[in-house]
Length: 82
Image (tube, rainbow, N blue to C red; front, side):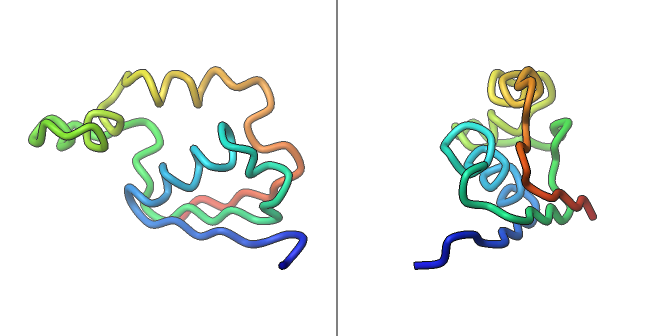
């Protein structure tokens, strides 16, 4: 029931959270996003497993390219990357 929320994501969860903020309407709801150890530029270790989620974490993946292409990625959302 909160109007705004703070969102914290760790590792792959940081990319999931970023996807929510940027692509799934989270800009309207998320007040503050904290990313802890998120592979925002991708990670080569994602080549070790063939799953959809790990493919999205590979450098130059379609998901990462879409997130990077967003002209207003955060809106009014305050962002902290740790």
